[in-house]
Amino acid sequence: MTDDAQKKAKAAQLSLVMSHLTLNMAVSIMTFTTRGELLKMVLKSKDYSQVGRIMSYWTGITAFVEFLLNPTVGKLSDAYGRKPFMMLSPYAAILLKSWVLMRPSLFSLTVERVVCDGLRTLSGTTMANAAVTDLVEPNKLRGAFSQMYMYLGAAIIVGPLVASKMSARGTYYAAIALAGIQLYTDQFWLQETLADTDRKPYKGFVNPFELFRLFLTGNDAITTSNIVMTFQNLIDVKIMADPLITM
Image (cartoon, one colour):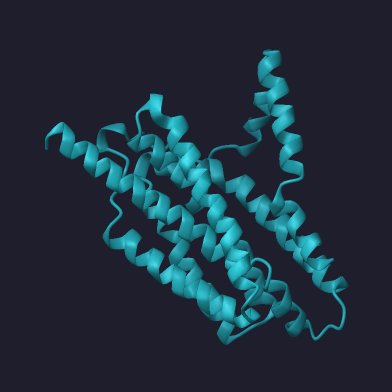
């Protein structure tokens, strides 16, 4: 394959990675604000106090699972490729959101929330970041990541606007339809971005608590940056969304 052909192939795959990321966020955000309505119906509650408490539990459980598994999944993708982990998200969305529609219960809603929203990060931004670094030259990464976050932003804005015009169950049907599109494009068009020569052997579970070493480097600039990022994430929309939805 000539250099021009390789560049075109990589550009096409980069577009598919952006498509995967956008659809992944849209599928998740479509039901993000309506899941509480289904929970309220399941609980047969007239107020949102119990709903808010359970939704807060969901946020905590999902964050804890992401914290424990994301580093290890990142290492697994370095060994086995990005695509298998990107494919997890549409499969899980179709199966678990269909389960919620057919058998809405506290258990089905909890499993769907924790798994699907956890995969929004794991199969979405985590794998997309890795795939972008596979495809883009180091000196062009800044532009590629800017483009990636632009697509994410579009999905975050448009998804809730569309969901606001639909019923709670309707948003689940729409999310399943989008996940079907994502599954098709990922399965048949998206190629593995990690070259065989760049794969690294998997050496076992990664201790997530090693992240605290970032604060102990002895470099004041790195420590300060990490502290600022920590406080920024404390008011991240994923953390604040559930109490805001409840209010």
